[in-house]
Length: 236
Image (cartoon, rainbow, N blue to C red):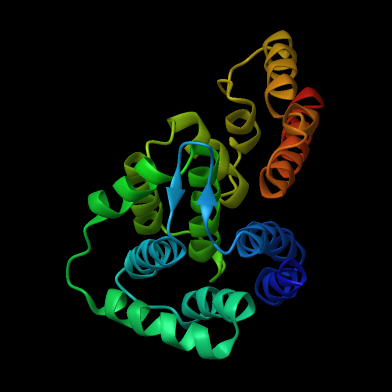
């Protein structure tokens, strides 16, 4: 249910692209819900309440990044948590969120270190997706928000190509297709074809069958973006 609620919410902000983004982020939160918002592997475990509060702290950083607090961004986060927990618990959680919003200084390094130590890399990529969704909920991702997202990605120990790849899904420009395929803008047709084959091997959903549902959905979305980027460049 959460993913469909998120898709409807996203559509109300950004029409069809917003519905796609909302569906993906809702799927991620729905997956965490089924696991009591506990992110686990054989070697990592983070308490649900700690995950929630640290995710809210990162959300607050994105909302405040451009020096103003947009109602659409607040509503984006709040509506997801209401869908996740119900209004009463969401209200309780957002007491902590309101404290984070009002803080003069937030310790990004401490917050991201928790995720680095207690969650796996794939989960941290999904967190970055969620934060990009917040930044984009008012219709665009500002330069100051991009700077903060970059700092968070660095703190989460995410690789630069992964950051640029996720960014390209939200921030559209003429070089987007090149960034998605991770090639230079002067790449030849042969180089584009070679890059496409590498990306297909890297992101094809069959590569992660049997893993987390959110990871599979993310791979499917990324694979579609790779295909679109390839078709754009090869037909130029």
